[in-house]
Image 1 (cartoon, rainbow, N blue to C red):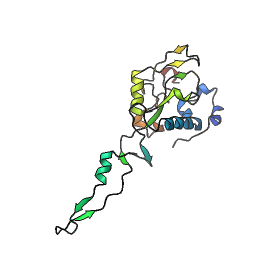
Image 2 (cartoon, one colour):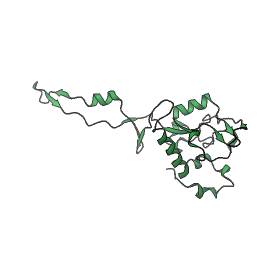
Image 3 (cartoon, rainbow, N blue to C red):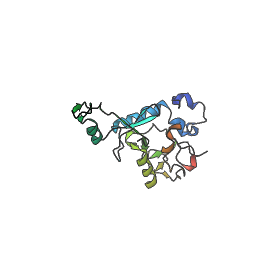
Image 4 (cartoon, rainbow, N blue to C red):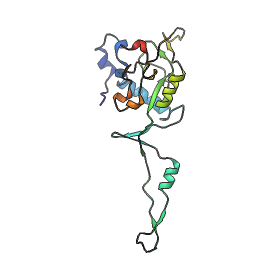
Amino acid sequence: MTRIITYKSIKANYKSPWYIPYDVLLNTIEWREFRQKIIDRDCSKCKVCNKEQSEKTGRDYFRKPTVQEIAENSKEQLVDLLGDGTLFVKMKNAPIVGIKTDSPTILHVHHKYYILGRLPWEYKSEALVTVCHNCHVKIHDEEMIPVFVDDSFKEKIDLTPCDRCNGTGFLEQHFHVQNGICFRCNGRKFEEFIA
């Protein structure tokens, strides 16, 4: 299980904030709170495909049932309980609240740009957007996420995305290990930052 810590409690262990592994930063209270604000602002849905986050109970993930699944489940049925042709109305089933899924929708908070040396939670909220893992991968496949030297946005740095996660910092198929953070780049996203 991943331990959630404060930034203040870890920064003394590193030469500078730049040397703190990105996966460690993503487990700080500061990031978790900022991330949740972005997800809440975006109504807990991917802003690209509109999918909602799967609910997790223990080790299992559940998705919301479709309208059709809810309708099927709530139909009254005639049943021959005695086997003599006498039909009885079967009571409706309990409402479905979730359907177990092996392919959950995991929401990420995507930075539209980066500023060199900036901590993940030190951005204006408009610089981030909630996306599901699949849309996050697609964004990184189709776009180069710009990295700027400072807030002036005048000087851009060209960096090479991690060849394992393509710059997303996550591997969905490993969401059960380290919350899916890429084990090659430790969530740092770019080849130049892999130690």
